[in-house]
Length: 309
Image (cartoon, rainbow, N blue to C red; front, side):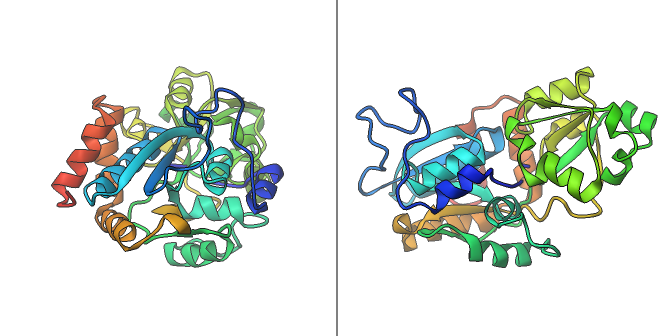
């Protein structure tokens, strides 16, 4: 649930006062009237383009609706570079984020050296948040980016850690979301921190089914898979250890525009964070990914079983 350096253009866009929309005439962030703003008195919730982010966003949405807050859903926006623009230009007001990934995206040069614990990451993150935004209480739930391989590949190349990739990476193909090519916690960080340079990079999806299918099917040798993904267990994948902490703490927390926050909103969302754990997030995500249950139904089950609605 993956984490990560913005390309220069995206960083520049975040610091401007007014931004344009994310796309052309088929922009999913615009309503029928073409406006990029949230309706007065309502909160527009966005998500990234992977299942866990959508599930968390739906949990947030239903938790707020249970407190009589009007909610508009704008899910599956895309990668961080896109949805942070949407937050800044007020197309959305709120979305689930991951503390370490967001820090690496916003901090110049990536996450500061030696900052890896949840407490330290959160403190560093608060210093670099774009003006007009804030984070609420972070949860114990954590979803980290991983480099994962099949059992066969791990055995063939004696792979246990990312360090072990260095002498053999020139023979291997890695797969991840397209944006991974430009992120520090992708190809750039792997090369600068570990000296790992792959033979080929295949742009697929962010820790999603395309990456997993390519990995298990032999089209790639190494895949960027999120640590809460049930595919790791069901496919008996080997997660390579990260001794140099390229991937920092990745605790789930709400990122919100300050104008959209109030005691009712923060109270509802902080209550969700208090109940989220890595274990239950993994369990409920499997209901969506493996059991193919409806995301809204799974979100409702989580909130009901945890006494939040």
